[in-house]
Image (cartoon, rainbow, N blue to C red; front, side):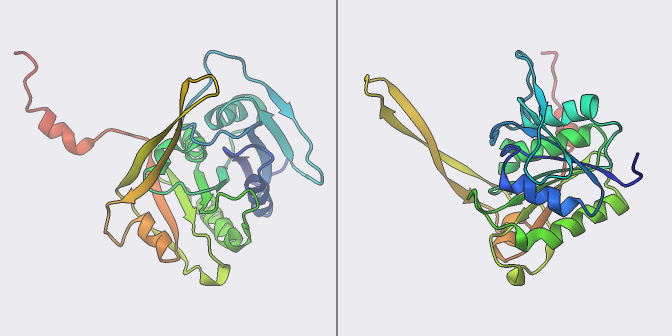
Length: 258
């Protein structure tokens, strides 16, 4: 049994996505890699888990691979759960999720399957990072970010993370020489203005396509959106305790007995 760090790799774009294969190759110099990823794309699944149907895992062989890989019929969060409880011989030293094809900055972290996998690992007490490249193309070029991704992962392996915290890393779609470095940020205040495109089937039934525009309301220069627009890799520490601690004192002034 190896004494190298054990690294769990997962994603939400599916086990054959170029992003996850790129992430595996970046991680291999740092430790022993095991991949457990969805058998089909699971983007936008958030932290969904499978409760009312069966889960299937299958060990697969991708041409030229020199690591263990398993496809899972469930969500990204399912992949982490089943990896920890059924597949891995011990708790991993690190979980990395991605590299996502597309942004998970700002409010997108709420919907992201990529980040939900990382958060699930954090819940399990595993240091975790979600990586995303601002390029939705299946043929996205991940080479510019390789050095930075490996450096961030190595720092987490060497230094650990605060309990309950995982990292959300987003990478601008630019050449390596144009990346200014890594910037520690907060999540920008932004959201989507949704529009439902209403259409009709040939049978006359209504159906809808969700579209929309991303609107950034945050003018701060310490946000992930600012960093990405100014050619930095954004790194946001995220915690999964959703308690609004600043509201507790005010709520304690309310009366619930009237």
